[in-house]
Length: 183
Image 1 (tube, helix red, strand yellow):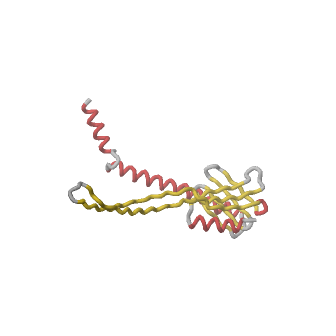
Image 2 (cartoon, rainbow, N blue to C red):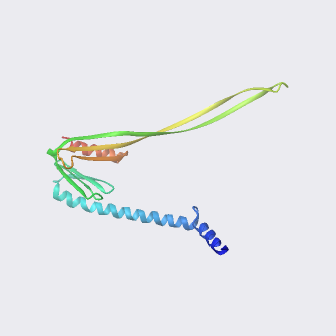
Image 3 (cartoon, rainbow, N blue to C red):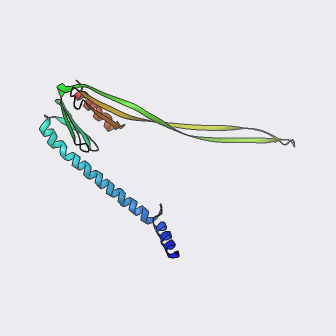
């Protein structure tokens, strides 16, 4: 029984959260996950060029969001989602409305306060007179995301809806796609 306890103690020491073996395994797991993601993205990218050649007329642009992609140009757009095995193509005449909106999703405030005080004893009365000054600093961070929708006259798949994180590249993509696809 004591030997089993010793083995358990050694194993828990080796795999503790800050242990060398645990950290090595975490690094290897993260590297394997990154390799998997890159392979998935490369697999998704394999579809962009052939689909654009088959369904679009030059010039066209594309924007990939994980395993989803929007290919768009003056004649319409193609949307595909590899995970859902979904492919839809819309001619410009089928697009009824395009909307974009930057949505506020919340805010986080952090603050710090520092107080400095001084008091003076009044004779031998046991009373003290003084004051304090408090300095408070607050910092609020707002969070946003983009909602981009393409509404069509297709009953089977009437809308492409993308919810994207807020960044300059996403804002640029949405601005270009909106300008090109807006009826």
